[in-house]
Length: 254
Image (cartoon, rainbow, N blue to C red; front, side):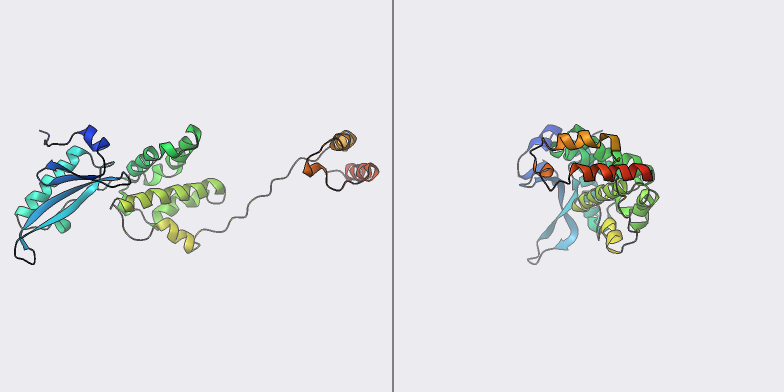
């Protein structure tokens, strides 16, 4: 049987900034930025404030984008039960930590309005789907450290360096968001790996342009003389010098 209260799923999604009560000490706190999180206020049996009155304490239950209304009600009930027994929920509560994939999917949804286009948004989550989810997707977000990040990056760091670089940026964002929601603490392992230079430096491979066949040089030069762009107005060699140079390259071969 589901627990009930004053709030509904629609209200949770649309209420403005402030502290909104659901009943039995559960509140939805909406920041001016729009971020939403759950808080439960309880009185731990035996704890009192400086004036001797029962001490009321707020405990965070997680972000509303990850913890549903029903989950928040269940956690709030668990916290109240512990408080009545004189147990501090901060040290005794069983926390449900989301997986890396769950947080990543939510980050992707939250950032949809910021993508340049649908293709860019798809590329963002597809990189994680292809190279991170198979290795760390099902792991609790708070258990991911440098070895787990390296497990994703190392296999493609040299062969697909640009992809690996983007992957590291996206893993970092997911872990940073998890920390902001209270699911992680300490330094981001992606930052630690970068600062310690754990992975080898990779030189960018030069991209060579195809050489023009020497037979095409006269037509190219004639066309170039008709251009007015800045790049075409630089110093030009006499045609005879260009033709001779092309002929020499042709005789030399590839």
